[in-house]
Length: 154
Image 1 (cartoon, rainbow, N blue to C red):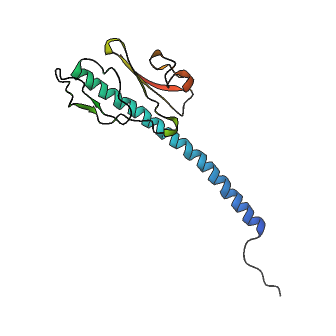
Image 2 (image 1 turned 30 degrees about the vertical axis):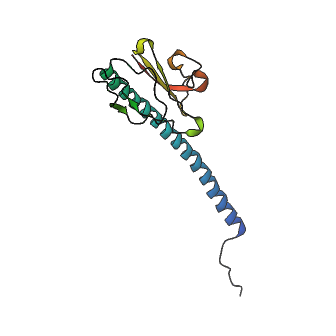
Image 3 (image 1 turned 90 degrees about the horizontal axis):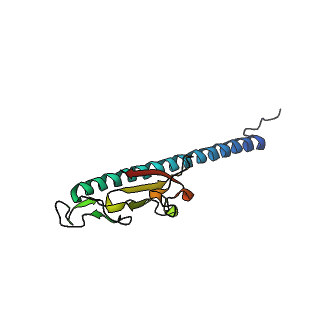
């Protein structure tokens, strides 16, 4: 009588390993898409936070700031007139793009007499054609660089 060997054959092991490899590859692709969507959501939330801070600044100071501080710096009052005091902090830290390899992608352009502004950001997902940030195609967020989300006031 022959003893029956226990275990798997080489072919069975190769099939199982190839199936596991395909599943791992597919899950990695799905995970990358979810991460890109998460970064896009953060970009949109950051733009809305900036918009809120700028509106509070304008209500205190009577106009928007002439320039937006760089990423990481605070948005503070610029004069001691009315309630626009240099001690007022309107945003403790200007946000930076969540994907550092693409650099800082938010743009700010104050309009005439500091009464308007445009904030824009590129997005990783979406197939819209984009828009020019503040009418200036040379900005980082211009059409050539994929500006897909804009907040303009008014």
